[in-house]
Length: 265
Image (cartoon, rainbow, N blue to C red; front, side, top):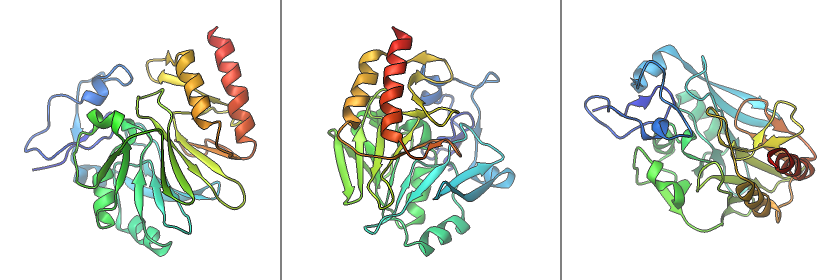
């Protein structure tokens, strides 16, 4: 029995003897199936051809896969005095990554913005003794590998510890969530691509589907803005290496919301 990974989105599925025929995440209109057809890779195959890399990304330890695999996002280690949280996830874990996280105080929990980044979340949890994985209940249908560590929370906000709060924004997915990080030196918002940092690194944008270029409607964008309005933050940290707005994040969000709404009329 193998927990195969979808080659296109990198999400791991429940154990089977042979790969499945379909990936519901890729068949959804927000993603797409490979032009060559659905394909799968076993974890040991992935490890044979790729490696997990760690590097500092604007002051936060990040984890990514090289050569680029699937969607290509990176995870981030959010360190707080009340316990560390892995934000978002990638499709492989390594002994070196586990050792480095343990050296920095271990891991108390995992939280993931939306299903495109669920990847090997169960493996990461197990590597740290089964720490909880916080996913919003509105996205439970997209959990392809059920696991006892998954916590499907409900509501609009969830306090993980005195420094960290999950905020359900919706938009990209019904349960899309971001993480507010209260810290010395400037609060941060970790957004995945629920709030997408653009290449200018001065603005953000919003989409229902990125690869299929379906914009998010005005009501959903206004809801995201309203959900984040109560929170103070300086930085916005996106889903990929170096896509961060460092300083002025609150203003950048407000400006970007206005620009986006004007653009879609």
